[in-house]
Image 1 (tube, chains in turn cyan, yellow):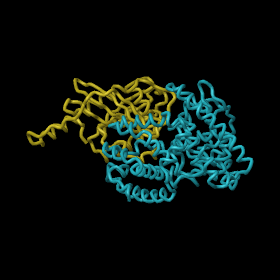
Image 2 (cartoon, each protein chain N blue to C red):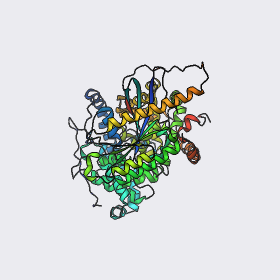
Image 3 (cartoon, rainbow over the protein chains, first blue to last red):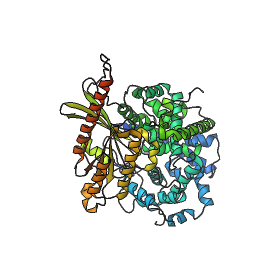
Image 4 (cartoon, rainbow over the protein chains, first blue to last red):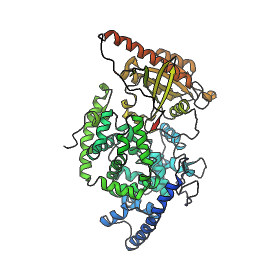
Length: 366
Length: 210
């Protein structure tokens, strides 16, 4: 693999391309977008001032307290994102305690299968982003390096599809492949549950079921509707969990979610999932088959209420409040046991365990 | 597993596409449903669904076509994708021997989980890359025949073989459904009630959970 490389990305949106290099989709709603920018711009300016002042007063690492939490929930200014993410996620500490590791990983060899799997996805990542085109100075090579290094570091994980979107968006924000690698490491080490991207996707499976369970609690009508229609919840939310909402929700919204993800941990992923279902509740209840339901969810995910990231994040944090880390940990434990149990039965059961909370739900009240 | 044949004679079939990553499953579906080919491919991480209405000699058929993720670890989500399928299209890339081996694994899994009720097609895709072919057509056809499947050379890019494959698969699914119907009719006591299923026309829908 080639030496690490820092790619400079021009900032500034144009008529066709947004600030992160994403081409505007054919169905892009200029009016809707202009309204949102008009509302969001003053907020961005204000947050920038606040952060300038904060970082004048205290240096990184930021101390963990309510003030930091509030600042992060209201959005980290783009100019500080890389530094703050590196700090609060623990990526910086990992990087400093493993000096030279990234370079060493780049020099290590990879299996033919992993190289093939990554290469196949390079040209299939953010095809609507100008930096991921085929130009040699774009982000495809850095993306290959990061994913390859991550696979070398964790042969048990190798390459999991979806990581291309996560790493790709990290690259667009950090503009630095080594930091992108360490942020992935921090996600794996500190933030996501164990075996998340494992070869059997164990952690993803567990989290999908946990979200299903929480929906049963927080949006019971939707849970009942799914059950009545006999629709497996997993079919709709795989990408939410695997991509951590990258390429699912509008970019700015994903970055605001990731601000919280790196500071507060993976709990925010559930809060967002609940908020999305809650937002789409009426549409979902009015949809009577899998096709209609997936369309409703898609509309919700790209609709104005989600595009307005500031309001959406506030909403996500309010809707699912309180949601303690302890609750999540204990749910993951219980569901994990069930998933293992059902997996053992799978050879004999055509349905598999994926209907866990549709066919045989844990009682949401217990 | 019933074909859900409504009282107005429409058959509702679920068809699932399976195969290794990057063999062209999504492209095959897009060509069939929208008659499009996009050079900018994206990888499928989560199943998506499209529908198509057909009419074969006066019989109305609604296909629900499930496009799935190719990477093996996503098979951990496994059976929900192909559960209750009436038909399966197993896709490989004619320039990639491994992808053909994967088809064989899928045949085993489907036969084990769904028995012989499921109608299987095997599609050797990217037939436009004939120069780079490594999987012999004869061998693939022989294999398909030996497992009760039908083999097609397809090219989503050049729109070759796809319409024909879906048509043939649909006909076979109708035959199986009608045989089942007859079997059930013999078992059914006379004067049993007829289930009425609302079969009102709906506009063609496409959906994907992105």
